[in-house]
Length: 99
Image (cartoon, rainbow, N blue to C red; front, top):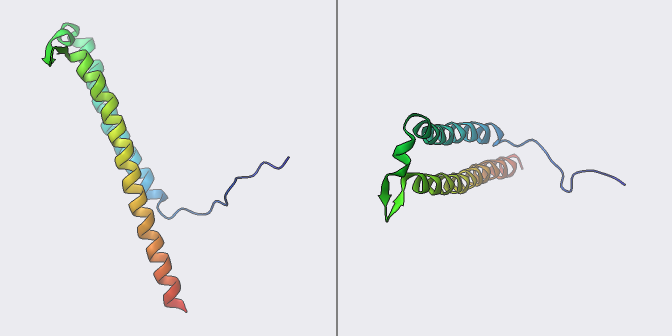
């Protein structure tokens, strides 16, 4: 059996942008999660405080962690697709300019 990629892979001109964006988003989410952990470590009773619609801080913060991760993933995908389209447009315009 031949184990090769299903599609040919080349150099990704948007790669450095994606890496930087991913690192910044990771740092943001890590700080958001670290604050959740810090609250649990420093003042665990605060997590029992009712903050929204009868739900305590632990539940609201937990759902917020999930929702923020989903929003970040969608935002990352949208920004990366936009940057890839930009580079593809530049590549096509440079190819048509050479002919």
